[in-house]
Length: 317
Length: 323
Image (cartoon, rainbow over all chains, first blue to last red):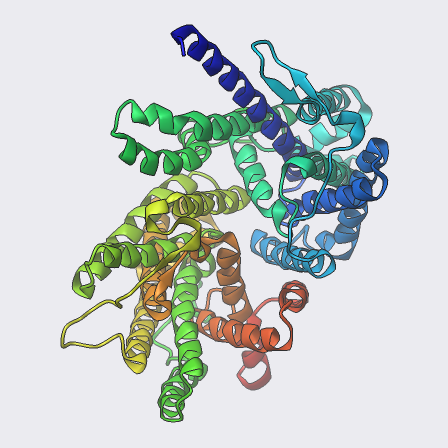
């Protein structure tokens, strides 16, 4: 193989991996966005948020298998997550808002255990099939001869559109203004006669729907299993720590950073280390460092800017 | 300090009776169960003793210092993996394995604590959780040491003629001894200046800082001590199960440790021991009812949290003890 040909292949591989990284980042953003907004309004930690991602994926899988319809799939998934989310809020979460973090962690941990197990009882432990709906079951050819699935392109496109919509809503509407105001000073907003809990429920509901939507979009490219949301939830926490609490911009920046770091690290780090170390050692160390990469980014952010890269409220509020 | 008012930490109140009953009862039960040849239950009690050590260590950070760590399973894993990896290379002497495991856990706790303590509240929870998850994935990527499948430990730590851990009761006595010593030591520490600074900073950080205490250093010291003790629990757990796997560091395990602390009674130390026993026995009872025991345990945890504080210790004190 000629050198030029190899170089072209490298560029193709790199661009495919960059697209994969952006696409993972977009999914993370959809999960983290709702979480960070609720978190900005009220300092409440909710481990069950990851379960909503799982609910969306299962709802999407069931509908996609039964109907094959794209429109139905991407409507039902967020709706299911919204219903479950609002139920959780009314039944349990609202009693936790004025409790300490420890109580919130434990109660939502209990909820998560229950939801994961309930899904296992209902659908079994085996991964469920989620066929790509026919409408998007094709590939785009990239320059250079590679091809990229339309479904993944759709994730990126729809995710960016949703991110843009969120920016516009938060910057330009009354509801968005209230959310911004609440993350600056929720107490003041309450004194001004705004029902902070309704605002919270609305934000939480939108966050739940977004997480459910992300679950459905991730469905065809992920293993749909009980507990599939747990890891995404922890990644969303990393995103919030990196991006800063309460800000959609921060969540987007953090998500893309985490998605790209993780994907590119796994794809290229071992080869990179091979340039420095013997192959056997590189094969040992490479994957370990690749899996640490995004947490190392988080550690650096904590060292340099403990409040995150783009927090909604400045430190020393 | 309030003048004239009753200082809950004044003097040296006796060890709570429930703790004596529990530890003494465990000792008797171990002897009886071994004599009756119920190795399964000996192992179960031993597991409770080991998890009690981890929960006790966690209570120092969560209960006494008020820092909610959702990543303590990481230290359990570091301790266990140190034993596993050294045994894999033929280094089976406990005199070598245990100190290395303790130093490793302390070092990991120092780094994680140093980074996480730059934040407060919910961020602290998310960051400890994230770093523990990082170690979980590192363990999975260690293909040389079993990766996802874990690593079988063919020889338990060897202490020459001192004690034999390959004997079921031997390991149980060592676990019981370490738990008792750790409990008495932490009780002392909690009542010392160190413990008072931690408690004070938990309730009002600014005031304690104004008094001239470097709150951060006290918290870091508590976090490192707690991580080291949890690492020791990991060492014991690896010896008990003769196996280590990434699951030791799973974030559910961290959640379970927190649940034990709260189930028993937050910030009381002996509550953590009680909680760990209650958790292990509950897990055993529920999973004998159904394989889907989380279906029952999850809502139970929600109810315990919503119903009120104090845990088992609060329950016992409310019923039978002085108010």
